[in-house]
Length: 431
Image 1 (cartoon, rainbow, N blue to C red):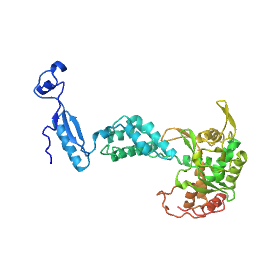
Image 2 (spheres, rainbow, N blue to C red):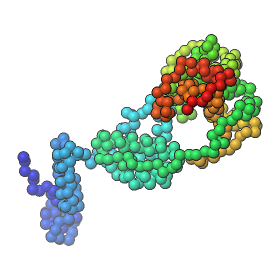
Image 3 (cartoon, helix red, strand yellow):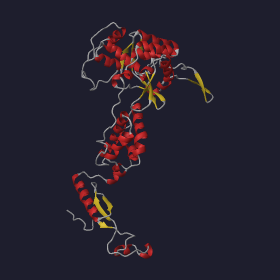
Image 4 (cartoon, rainbow, N blue to C red):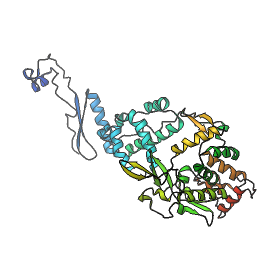
């Protein structure tokens, strides 16, 4: 085994020191006069070889610190736990630029949610900080004092924890300072009146106040229980009038203000077949008569192809002038645009109520469009439909959330739901 050099750590010569060796290395006539001194004040350089046998060096103000560092790093190299300190000196922004391409979600809504957490919360606060400078206490203080709301803390901490966890795996830092950071906000609680969906009578009042064009859309939402993106993404080819069913195969999503077609519902359970009541069937037929949607089946990657959609806005198929040329209006409905007719309708119906979101502080209007889905589920439960059948019809993912996780869904789920909605079946609720 080779002997260790006796001059490691070694003291480096300094232009500001007046000891004899430093005066010799940096003559006063070239580097300026300074007061003579006996002891050198130059820094101490510790030299070592890393796990790849590459020469490394680090400077310290005192010899004692350099010796301690050498003992520590030599032990880490022997044990296989050595990390190059310079790898942890990368900023959080630069690490994100390396990390994100290999972790970018394929689902657009998930990708946008993570990008929002990064650009709004993480990057402004920590982007210019070095990875190895982050500490548990400052992260915990940031969460408690600057991240408002349970949902915000949950999403931001999830992303930051993944980012720093992989920095540990990439041997840039020794531990994840975010691993034990906890949420300080409590889950939001709402008054039961704000969670209860409107009655069928209240929905009838709202429907009467909506413009005629939009009434089939709310009828469809009321009697299918589809999510907004699923309902608006319904294509003529998915509608089977022979069996009175509709297949849920696609959704329309809002990608930062741009409506896009996506072939993956919220969960895998979203791929399903939903029964149609006479009311839902009439709503679909009314829109088919108005717009005559194409029966073609195009690929998702081919674009929106709005001519296949059943539910569109009143300007669908018309033309508008853009840069001097006529362009056909697709008329794809967005949730925000629909709110322009929804909010006035619930106000005119006399059931609207302003509700303050306890988490964000923003004011919202009750009832919401999504309450149609809650009301639909309540009707199924009230008619005694089994939990498994309700789960299937609504497109919920059962993973670990219910005691009947492995209960088999019967083949008669679609027909049972149709009978329940028609009021012809009265069964005991199963929990």
